[in-house]
Image (tube, rainbow, N blue to C red; front, side, top):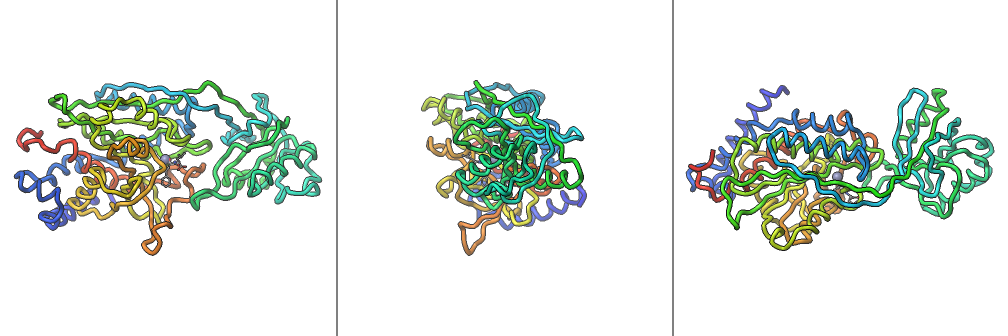
Length: 463
Ligand code: BES
Ligand code: ZN
């Protein structure tokens, strides 16, 4: 559907639903009694936010920059991109650095110049000097006889289920004279395909040992079949790393000591080997697009646009941010909106959930549910989930929620569906991003948040 058609049919649907919603949802009732409906406020956002603009940010982050592991160069490039974009909208921007653990990054170079990023074993050979050899695939790799042809070769093997079993695979490869080992991850943690990892070896070995994602293993098997089995392996150990949060502030129109603050924050890092288009360039793209649109309006609360570093390494950026606040700083925060995976095209991820750590409702879940009702958009549902940057705020007693597209089976709330390409090299715009889902998330989160930052203002003072 073209943009115009989509918008006009949506406006009609929204008008219908808005009239139905008035008098039922708390927010809508209040808006009517103010003599100025929240619905017309919503239009200030909905009429302007543009999924294509948000997806352009996703493209820059996931394609122009690529993978963005916390603490490394590409994470800085992402932070600079976010900061420069926010500055271009006229916001004050600061960087906040914090220390993070070492990274061990593996690169696999193909003959045609393509380079794939994986995890390297800290106890394997870490060297800038490429180990070059022909690659063979070994389907088992758990007994010595599997390695008869391995001398002088790089061996690709399916990763055995346990650490002690894959340590045996590596030991046998070394004994057979292999020049490198690539363990292909087979199973993912949430029904997704296996992701890259850092093999954990008991003792040092003098060949590179890599943890490849499932799809990298499949791609490499294809390359072997096509006769491109000669590859180069290099690995780097990065130490004394720091990661970074980016923070832009939009000050309330008039401020007092009681002025509250609202945060819209999304992580800009990705896991090793993954371009992270949906996880979470999508959340950053949504944040930047809302920052662009909100720039044109006054708010009665301070609004912070943030991108967090090293979320994938343990929510490190958001924990750091919360930890450095004093109690007054924590008390000032009224609401934290965390978009993380807001644009997947996975068909089973049917709803945009607003998730809190303990399943309780708060101003973030309520404002977005009310916005969905006013807009006649039934995508939004409440849920319970941790695993993202809303967690540290929740622990500090600050109302926060995660926004994510997911499918949850009503007959078993413990079964949930997220895209299989999550945390893998296939988390790309082509394979995992839906403009419609991005637009819906922009409309709902954009309207709910706007309502929160403009609440309690006499309607006539709004512009
Ligand atoms: N975007 C995910 C969180 C997520 C994934 C929530 C699937 C719900 C369903 C996030 O980037 C992530 O992967 N988080 C880590 C956090 C951990 C390192 C503390 C995770 O859950 O593994
Ligand atoms: Zn994420």
